[in-house]
Length: 145
Image 1 (cartoon, rainbow, N blue to C red):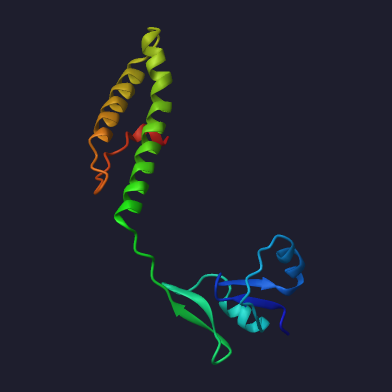
Image 2: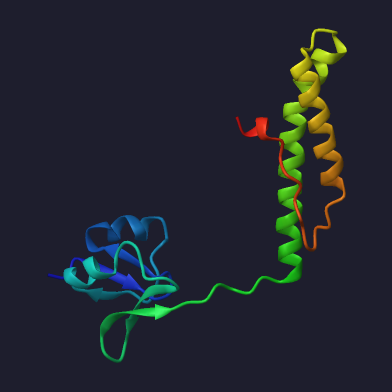
Protein backbone atom coordinates (compact mmCIF):
# COMPACT_ATOMS: atom_id res chain seq x y z
CA UNK A 1 0.00 0.00 0.00
CA UNK A 2 1.11 3.59 -0.63
CA UNK A 3 -0.27 5.76 2.16
CA UNK A 4 2.66 8.18 2.27
CA UNK A 5 4.12 10.88 0.08
CA UNK A 6 7.70 12.12 0.32
CA UNK A 7 9.33 15.45 -0.56
CA UNK A 8 13.02 15.84 -1.40
CA UNK A 9 12.68 19.58 -0.75
CA UNK A 10 11.62 19.15 2.87
CA UNK A 11 13.05 15.65 3.38
CA UNK A 12 9.73 14.81 4.97
CA UNK A 13 6.87 12.37 4.70
CA UNK A 14 3.26 13.45 4.21
CA UNK A 15 0.42 11.02 5.01
CA UNK A 16 -2.05 10.92 2.15
CA UNK A 17 -4.93 11.10 4.64
CA UNK A 18 -3.61 14.53 5.77
CA UNK A 19 -3.27 16.13 2.33
CA UNK A 20 -6.38 18.26 2.76
CA UNK A 21 -4.92 19.81 5.91
CA UNK A 22 -1.52 20.48 4.33
CA UNK A 23 -3.23 22.13 1.36
CA UNK A 24 -5.42 24.27 3.64
CA UNK A 25 -2.39 25.73 5.41
CA UNK A 26 -0.43 26.06 2.16
CA UNK A 27 2.27 23.69 3.43
CA UNK A 28 2.37 21.15 0.65
CA UNK A 29 5.62 21.00 -1.34
CA UNK A 30 5.37 20.65 -5.11
CA UNK A 31 7.73 17.67 -5.46
CA UNK A 32 5.74 14.94 -3.70
CA UNK A 33 6.15 11.32 -4.76
CA UNK A 34 4.32 8.24 -3.53
CA UNK A 35 6.34 5.81 -1.44
CA UNK A 36 5.42 2.41 -0.15
CA UNK A 37 4.58 1.84 3.48
CA UNK A 38 7.64 -0.40 3.82
CA UNK A 39 9.89 2.40 2.49
CA UNK A 40 8.24 4.83 4.89
CA UNK A 41 8.90 2.50 7.84
CA UNK A 42 12.52 2.05 6.76
CA UNK A 43 13.25 5.77 6.39
CA UNK A 44 11.20 7.37 9.17
CA UNK A 45 12.79 7.87 12.57
CA UNK A 46 16.47 8.06 13.42
CA UNK A 47 18.74 8.38 10.40
CA UNK A 48 22.32 7.17 10.12
CA UNK A 49 24.93 9.79 11.04
CA UNK A 50 25.17 12.62 8.47
CA UNK A 51 22.35 11.14 6.40
CA UNK A 52 18.83 12.12 5.47
CA UNK A 53 16.12 10.30 3.54
CA UNK A 54 15.94 11.04 -0.15
CA UNK A 55 13.98 9.84 -3.15
CA UNK A 56 16.04 8.83 -6.17
CA UNK A 57 13.94 9.83 -9.18
CA UNK A 58 15.95 7.60 -11.52
CA UNK A 59 15.63 4.38 -9.51
CA UNK A 60 12.26 5.46 -8.09
CA UNK A 61 13.33 4.33 -4.64
CA UNK A 62 14.08 5.85 -1.29
CA UNK A 63 17.73 6.00 -0.24
CA UNK A 64 19.92 7.55 2.43
CA UNK A 65 21.78 10.58 1.15
CA UNK A 66 24.82 12.11 2.77
CA UNK A 67 24.28 15.60 4.13
CA UNK A 68 26.78 18.07 5.48
CA UNK A 69 26.04 20.85 7.88
CA UNK A 70 25.95 24.25 6.21
CA UNK A 71 29.08 26.28 6.73
CA UNK A 72 28.38 29.17 9.06
CA UNK A 73 29.66 32.56 8.07
CA UNK A 74 31.72 34.56 10.56
CA UNK A 75 28.77 36.96 10.85
CA UNK A 76 26.39 34.10 11.75
CA UNK A 77 28.84 32.78 14.32
CA UNK A 78 29.25 36.24 15.83
CA UNK A 79 25.47 36.72 15.99
CA UNK A 80 25.07 33.34 17.74
CA UNK A 81 27.80 34.23 20.23
CA UNK A 82 26.17 37.62 20.91
CA UNK A 83 22.89 35.87 21.69
CA UNK A 84 24.71 33.47 24.01
CA UNK A 85 26.39 36.40 25.78
CA UNK A 86 23.05 38.18 26.22
CA UNK A 87 21.43 35.00 27.56
CA UNK A 88 24.22 34.54 30.08
CA UNK A 89 24.07 38.20 31.13
CA UNK A 90 20.29 38.03 31.45
CA UNK A 91 20.48 34.91 33.61
CA UNK A 92 23.13 36.54 35.80
CA UNK A 93 21.01 39.68 36.23
CA UNK A 94 17.96 37.64 37.20
CA UNK A 95 20.00 35.72 39.77
CA UNK A 96 21.81 38.83 41.07
CA UNK A 97 18.78 41.03 41.73
CA UNK A 98 17.38 39.21 44.79
CA UNK A 99 20.87 38.72 46.20
CA UNK A 100 21.72 42.40 45.79
CA UNK A 101 18.35 43.34 47.29
CA UNK A 102 19.07 41.21 50.35
CA UNK A 103 22.49 42.86 50.74
CA UNK A 104 20.99 46.36 50.31
CA UNK A 105 18.34 45.63 52.95
CA UNK A 106 20.90 44.20 55.33
CA UNK A 107 19.23 40.80 55.47
CA UNK A 108 21.61 38.76 53.30
CA UNK A 109 23.13 35.62 54.71
CA UNK A 110 26.86 35.01 54.39
CA UNK A 111 26.13 32.43 51.68
CA UNK A 112 24.10 35.00 49.71
CA UNK A 113 26.95 37.52 49.97
CA UNK A 114 29.40 34.94 48.64
CA UNK A 115 27.03 34.00 45.80
CA UNK A 116 26.62 37.66 44.85
CA UNK A 117 30.38 38.17 44.79
CA UNK A 118 30.83 35.06 42.60
CA UNK A 119 28.10 36.30 40.30
CA UNK A 120 29.66 39.75 39.97
CA UNK A 121 33.02 38.17 39.09
CA UNK A 122 31.27 36.03 36.50
CA UNK A 123 29.60 39.08 34.92
CA UNK A 124 32.95 40.90 34.75
CA UNK A 125 34.50 37.84 33.09
CA UNK A 126 31.63 37.77 30.58
CA UNK A 127 32.34 41.34 29.52
CA UNK A 128 35.87 40.33 28.56
CA UNK A 129 34.89 37.44 26.28
CA UNK A 130 36.10 37.72 22.67
CA UNK A 131 32.93 36.89 20.74
CA UNK A 132 34.81 35.86 17.62
CA UNK A 133 36.37 32.93 19.53
CA UNK A 134 34.55 32.74 22.87
CA UNK A 135 36.09 31.02 25.84
CA UNK A 136 33.11 31.26 28.17
CA UNK A 137 33.86 31.66 31.87
CA UNK A 138 32.69 28.90 34.14
CA UNK A 139 29.18 29.56 35.42
CA UNK A 140 28.97 29.56 39.22
CA UNK A 141 27.88 26.06 40.22
CA UNK A 142 24.94 27.18 42.34
CA UNK A 143 23.29 28.92 39.35
CA UNK A 144 22.34 25.62 37.74
CA UNK A 145 20.67 24.41 40.94
